[in-house]
Structure formats: structure tokens, C-alpha cells
Amino acid sequence: AQSVAQPEDQVNVAEGNPLTVKCTYSVSGNPYLFWYVQYPNRGLQFLLKYITGDNLVKGSYGFEAEFNKSQTSFHLKKPSALVSDSALYFCAVRDIGRDDKIIFGKGTRLHILP
Amino acid sequence: ETGVTQSPTHLIKTRGQQVTLRCSSQSGHNTVSWYQQALGQGPQFIFQYYREEENGRGNFPPRFSGLQFPNYSSELNVNALELDDSALYLCASSLWADTQYFGPGTRLTVL
Image 1 (cartoon, rainbow over the protein chains, first blue to last red):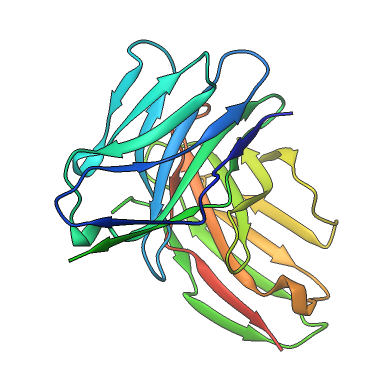
Image 2: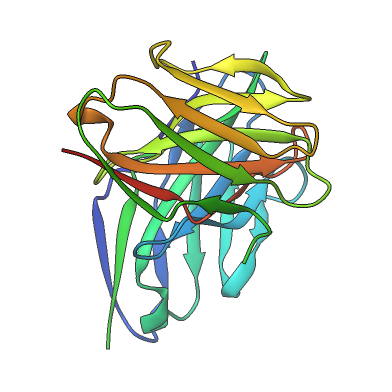
């Protein structure tokens, strides 16, 4: 069965510093991976996805993610954090079978300290 | 902002009641998925509708049911509400197997 793991419940980063939010995955077959962000009392916003191609995927708001097949990881990164990046981040994997559901990690809360 | 809308924004019900949540898909999308997000958790897949038929279900009992209409809008119905049904219910629309875009959610509180 497909699964994702986000090993950190919370990540604290000073404004202006680089940030990394970790994600590892387990899939049978080729992985379809996503990052979503959730702000308080809001739905999920799509940030970026990896399907195939370059291992470094660029997304919205200056975020990027690095796909590493040997380590089965898909870490989210940003070179310089903003206070407005503070939110809940979800890594997810698509489980394509009869349906097309997305399986989410439990989320990582990112705090950017001014 | 996505083109996915959900109504109502908030809802308070009592145990045993029934509730209907609504979702309007983004233009051009033919697939709707529903997720339940309990407090402090990631979203959990409830079911998915493609071309007005359910084509996948997560680990939720039959009292969770749904519909998709010809205009691809959708409803989630929950019967015999339980306290544990209190959660944020998220609708996502997509063009089959493409990226899912989420609505703002409906916050359901069961007392």
C-alpha cells in the first residue's frame, strides 16, 4: 500500500534562512508525489508535484522539492523563509487504482520566526 | 484561490441527525473527491465520483454517501451523525488523474 511519512511534527526556522520540510514515501510502481499547504481555517492549496522528469521540482511561492528515488524522499525546500510561510504542510502520494485518491501524511507545522 | 466552492462554511448538528454538504467543482473538472480532516490530522479519503458514479471509497461506513450531478457538482451526505464525525470536510476536484484542487472546506461540529 502507498504511504507517506512526515517525521517532524513541527519545524522552526528563522526568517531569511533556508527551510526544509521532510517527507519519505512508500509506493509500488512509479511515485506521484505532491506538496500541499494549509493556512488556518482554510482548505489545502497545491504547491507542487512530481510525476516524472527532473528531480528538482519548482512550485508556487518560491518552494521547490527534491525527489530522491534511492532514499525514497521528497523534501520540500525554500532558499529564504518568510514569516508568511508559517502554515501546515502536507506531503501526499497518489494511489492510482480503481480510484485516484491521494494519501496524505500527517502534516508538519512550519513556524517562521521573525 | 481554486475554483472549488463548498457550502456551508460551518455547521452544527446533534448526534443522530443527518447532514448534507455541497461542493461545486472547478470548471472543466469531471472528478470530485471528498476527504475528512479531523483536528490535528491529515485528510482521509472518503470517496470519489467520476462521471456521476462512485469509483472508489476509503474506510468509511455506508452512512457516508454521496452524489455527483451532471454539472459535476457533488454532495456528501452523512446519516446518524456521531460525535467522531466532527471534522473539516474537504472537497477536491480534478480532471481524472490530474492534480486535485481543494475547496475551503466545511467545518462540521456534532454535539
